[in-house]
Image (tube, rainbow, N blue to C red; front, top):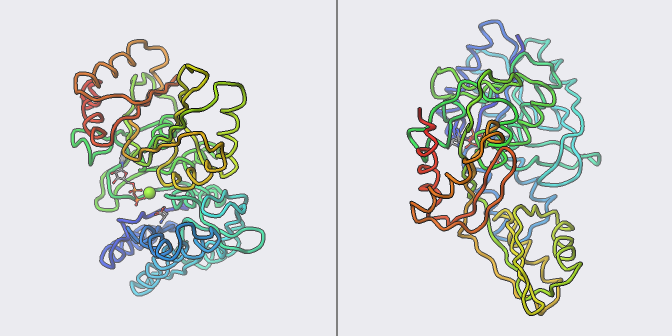
Length: 399
Ligand code: ADP
Ligand code: ASP
Ligand code: MG
């Protein structure tokens, strides 16, 4: 079999952990498999590098950021390769460029355009384990790019596709995908299987156990994807296109802490104003999520919306372009709690239950949005985990 194994930040977080991973990879190879490994930076490393950049500049150029951030994954890929060679397991480390990972030019959020795995295939045919630095590629001008936070998952899935691997295993620090983050709710239940669609929704709404774009690609390429722990040998969660025979109404609860509210007050209540606000933001490629506009009175209205907290500074900067009579406020102390489930669309009463759970717990809902398969609410960050636990219990997800 040809396996792509991805090891996340905690799994390679210390030199001891890298040694453990080397042993696991060697074992897989010794069992007769071809193995391509994708690694993240050591946990905390990418954040540390971002902080370093911010020491010098509030808004560092993204090309330079990408050069910097790609270094974290190069460190772990080389260290793991060195450790493997020392164990007598022939290995070679590749940067994103050497792995043939070609992307567009959106620095810090680049999309993979194509993969040319020539060097990888050569190394495999020589019997080597290939260790690829995740999260990175190069654009048409040979500049280093990165794929967005959590992007090593995407590197792994894309490589599994390009190499037609039999399986893509994502090794992390929990046993698989749970009904909610097991660090918030210890009663969360591990799911043996989830569909691509449910996983995509959970990941997009904050369950960072898999990066959402990696799930999207796995679905598109129909890749056998498994999430499991690098700390034990438990069976993980299979992410699959198979529909479950009797799907549960709700598959899980997600918490997204990377949220901020922006409110623009004293806006003229006339056509075109909202367009102008969101145009300025889209020019800066800021992802606006929930939007509310309250009914205008006296010819003025207020518009509120959410943006990722790590894009708030850029959003506020961009909004300075607008009419100076607008009053702009922001609030970082909010999180988004979401209930996800394919079975929800044919079940009324799910939403009303969520709202009564929130009210019983004295949690004020600041914004709501719903779709056929999810309900999301914005609440004060101090109630985020309480909301997750209360909803988990109310929908009996531990059963
Ligand atoms: P890695 O460094 O291996 O990529 P991440 O930190 O990105 O790992 O993702 C794993 C973390 O995702 C877990 O430690 C867990 O706290 C969190 N998590 C959030 N939601 C879920 C969920 N529904 N199931 C499992 N883990 C989740
Ligand atoms: N190191 C990168 C990050 O922290 C990519 C990854 O871990 O997947 O976002
Ligand atoms: Mg991750």
